Image (cartoon, rainbow, N blue to C red; front, side, top):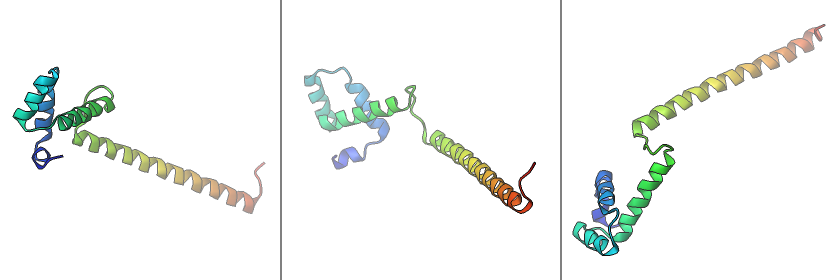
Length: 106
């Protein structure tokens, strides 16, 4: 990737991809030359855009904030389940110890 394309924002890259859609090979060559981008870069940006949309399930790309919120929610749920599992394990150990001391229940 050239230094010039590395400085382009994601929105600019996506805009170039959108504008180039449906062009003939000759038009694409001219478009790339006018915008200072290689065909390979344009194709790479297109593939990345499509991949992001396909992986989002319904075509909507998750924002960073939505992703962070979901990660926080999943971490909280995991912590809750870990605590419940630890409590269940402690109760089982306690039950075994008391039955060993007092004998089996009748």
